[in-house]
Image (cartoon, rainbow, N blue to C red; front, side, top):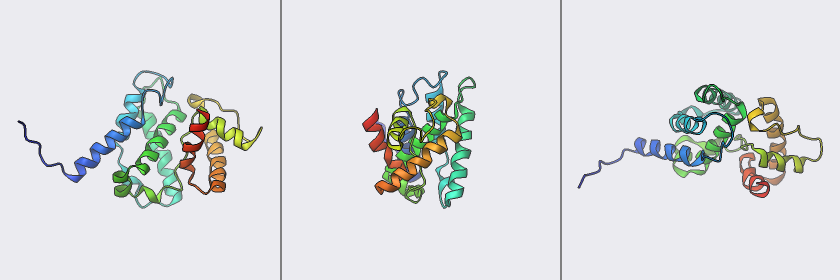
Length: 182
């Protein structure tokens, strides 16, 4: 019988991060987002991302870091398929799951980031936001492949207002909107 070695805490956290990346970015998560390799490359990027870079940030630094990591993720996606909306959705889904994972959240202080995390946007969430906002209040949903940062910012801004009214962090709106409008 092979003997297992005792796992170091940093090894354990790396494996948990890899597990969260794989389970968060399923085949259907980024369906129809372009060339083969999008899902696998996104998973690998998120599994290897340095979560330490999110520790001790203020809101402006967090937003800058989120933009920076979105651009970094875009660089590892297949050349023929680098939609900004796809990368941002993957990063937002992963960040939410890090928040929801006790080990990663505690180690990298994601509870400090909770109120700044974005809702992961997709067609179901966008539809829910548009229904809540009312006719003409939000732009036409262009689809994840064609979503720009400016369009995303408009949806995120309304999502923040809605979350404030509900008394929850914006990232948690996914539990309401996605489940209702999927």
